Length: 248
Image (cartoon, rainbow, N blue to C red; front, side, top):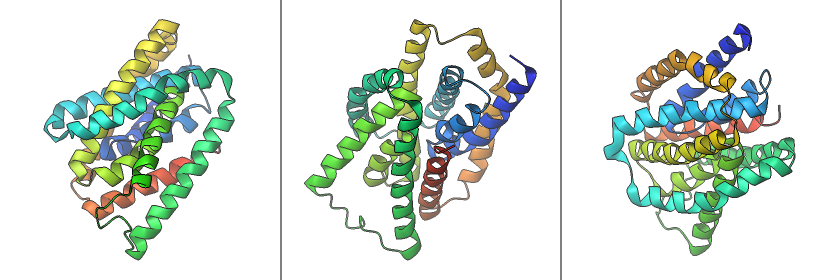
């Protein structure tokens, strides 16, 4: 491992995980395309999974009173079905195909929601969710589990559910952090069992600890300046950017 790669990884973490510390997702989505340009996926994914786990632990400890337990249980129920499938798919399907599928979906969803925010057309403002839409939201959770199992990046699909069901900013982000704490713990255990937690991965995580602290601090400062609508706009802008990065 060259010192240049350590420094590059630390910079990727510092930039990408400001977003995760702020809204509860997006760190891995932004960091993975960047980190995979100088690291192998077998190294980048386990290292970023642990980074995301550390941030989730800190945020859950800080704001545990804001976890929406019913939504947490529903999200986990949907994701746990897809999680082992994602772990298997990563070994069988081309990585590029999975990333492109995710990218297209993220771009379409985020563009639609940003259009509604800009034009003030909120199709979900009446609070009513049809049976069909509930079914689609459950499918989104399943797909989130699949992508979480493959790349530790199931956030976009989970956000589709969370933006419809969890309207308050603090509950939204903290509930997502509790989900990542659970799923990333499972993924880290899996990586340990299959030998993916190499000395290279551990060293990358240790080297990035100052960057994690910086990302948490900066995200705290930014969070105080965001109201509900701006928060939603930031969420979907991140989703759009992450979708574009999937094509790198």
